[in-house]
Amino acid sequence: MYQPELETLPRETLRTLQGERLKRIVAYVYARVPFYRHLMDEAGIGPEAVRGLEDLPRFPFTKKDHLREHYPFGLFAVPREEVARIHASSGTTGKPTVVGYTKKDLGVFAEVVARSLAAAGARPGMMLHNAYGYGLFTGGLGLHGGAEALGMTVVPVSGGMTERQLMLIQDFRPEVISCTPSYAQTLAEEFRKRGVAPEELSLEYAVLGAEPWTEAIRKQVDEGLGVRSTNIYGLSEIIGPGVANECVEERQGSHIWEDHFLPEVVDPQTGEPLPEGKVGVLVFTTLTKEALPLLRYWTGDLTFLTREPCSCGRTHVRMGPILGRTDDMLIIRGVNVYPTQVEAVLLGIPEVEPYYQIVVRREGTLDEAELKVEVSERFFQEIGKKALSDEVIEADHRLHALREKVAHKVKDTIGVTVKVSLLAPGEAPRSEGGKLRRVLDLRKA
Ligand code: DLL
Image 1: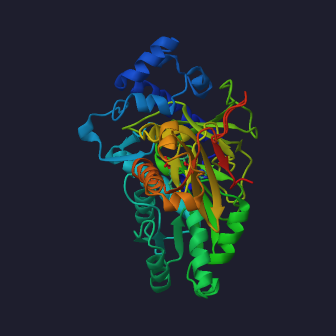
Image 2 (image 1 turned 120 degrees about the vertical axis):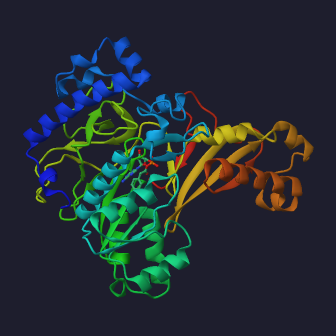
Image 3 (image 1 turned 135 degrees about the vertical axis):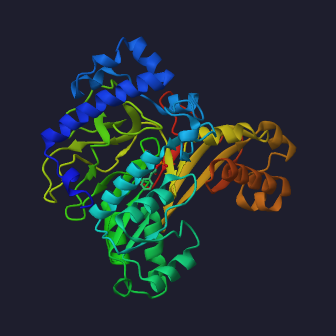
């Protein structure tokens, strides 16, 4: 363990610590963040009304929309000059969700990621091949800071350029790899194609997250790379990766670092707290964050909690795998995509209508997204109402150009590569009274 004294705190002590920190953070946001002051005034809760954890359910939820409404820095609790780093994740409107860290927050970030890596099997002196993307995304720099804190040798390779990744893994001989589960599958697949057996690889542990995955994928990665993989969970708003991690001993749920992040699971409809073991929306209150403290942040992720003792000795509560989301956000190759983002892009292209369907498949080990979109009636007339088969589209430069244009706009604004299929007016699915399924996620099938 990275911090055994904290990771094995008796539950009663942990609860007391959380209660004290909750009182402090509530007073802190009331004094520093106008949004929270108004919210609490409206709900009739003064900062002195909080006696302990039992008062938490009295607070309203903070949602992604609140962050968006105060874009970019409106919910920050410190002057901009005290913000040491900014990260962001993609949002529905094309504007990202912006998060900030003070120097102290970056210390906590490194600490929780170091705990996560140690739980995953990593030790000081081991080498980490870090294939999470570096940049505004929290994955790359997040794992990087934690690995340095733990005393590892970090290879900041970032995502992509698979050929080079394969070479570096063979030449540098890292013990640990961190990347998305789908990318780990790709790497395993590519090694296999080249006749490199898992036993020849130096890898022992894989730290996989940022997108949902299953036990089937775990088996494939473990066998393909010769590793024991664990789940790392997190979200930018709460800190980034390292909110929770499975212990390599049990791999039965991810320990949430509860002295920093206070979890609840609530009913998606009513918002009422649910008992242990029941599936609902995961909600977090940050207990120590300075730059962007959040009370009862609605993650939209669906899972359950268990406080049953774990054989690894850690006392921190465990969360199950993410079973889905309350909203319809898709994660395609680790990039967050909302159907409404796609809709916004389509609205800016006069030759198409915002009637569309997104079909996501898993081709081999990677996600493939197809965007089926209707051309406008007018455009359809102009091209002489042709049947829109692939052959016809390839042969007609206007259709071909339109397909490229849509794909480029989607890539440029959302960052995800889609294969575009053009449909004649009326061909895309319409609502038949119930909810319209804009998204067909065949990966879950
Ligand atoms: O994905 C942080 C991260 C980076 C986690 C690297 C793990 C590894 P965001 O881009 O803000 O942050 O996306 C957060 O991704 O609400 C979940 O829906 C999903 N997600 C993250 N980790 C997991 C996981 C990073 N282990 C959103 N399993 C979250 C399933 C995950 N979904």
